[in-house]
View 1 (spheres, rainbow, N blue to C red):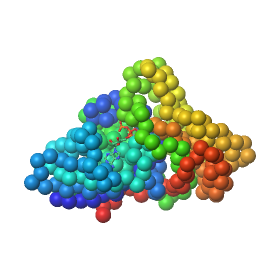
View 2 (view 1 turned 90 degrees about the vertical axis):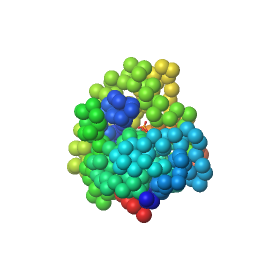
View 3 (view 1 turned 120 degrees about the vertical axis):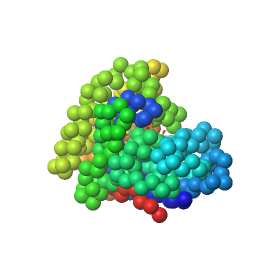
Length: 324
Ligand code: ADP
Ligand code: DP6
Ligand code: CO
């Protein structure tokens, strides 16, 4: 009747950017991520026959009607699967900034999928749990697993083959991911809205699709061979291409701020000094810098000298779902 789950966020090295089915959250391309140890969500779900509606508390405060409706829509999927029609109280704590480009929707919906399914007596694991989490937020399907994870887009219309698979476990390859915060405010254009507009209106979207499948294959090969330089070059190119598509949208938009470019410039300078560091950016202005652990100190030092940098969160590969 009651369950608590913990899920970590993930950072995409090859981005998910666009849906072929919005209702089922089916992506146009496969994507690849690393689950992070530093950022996570803890969610408790309790079903109770006394309740006449669902309620949702985020970080100790009752969420807005709109946010609660999103959670109810998700719980409806769980109720359909379990046959349990009771309403629920959902309490969630984000140990990550919410809606700021740090993937709170990934840890948020992975934790909700795990807690809600367990509380309703379903025993979902792996593939099935990943598919459920996907229905809340696409990137959440990857947070079921730790380490390096691929979301295979699938080909079926019903989404039955669109889920994440672990490709390398957390301990197998340690990398440093420095999450550089320049802005903790919520983004103006949520990921969902941004990718939809891009798919519908950007003439650059076809170019993105063409490049990204090949970049995914290169990234997977680089992971297999532990070739950090190849992985870094590939993930940086992929992130830049994703952001380029938004400039072609109608109306056009972009997530970057002046400080975003400043950090990119510093990272390029580091590379010219022989330090292998690469950037990736999600739907927001904040930058994630990826390097090998041996260079972490040097990269941290360099980035912390930039005035516009508010905070740097040092992350490493993290674990998959757990129950508390
Ligand atoms: P982010 O970069 O943080 O993933 P998104 O735009 O993808 O930003 O998603 C933000 C949305 O994710 C929020 O508006 C909210 O609807 C949802 N969300 C965030 N945290 C949680 C949570 N703990 N539980 C349920 N939903 C959440
Ligand atoms: C840029 O998973 O947040 O972070 O499926 O609409 O909830 P919805 O979007 P979301 O999109 C993530 C986009 C991204 C890239 C990625 O994480 O792969
Ligand atoms: Co998100």
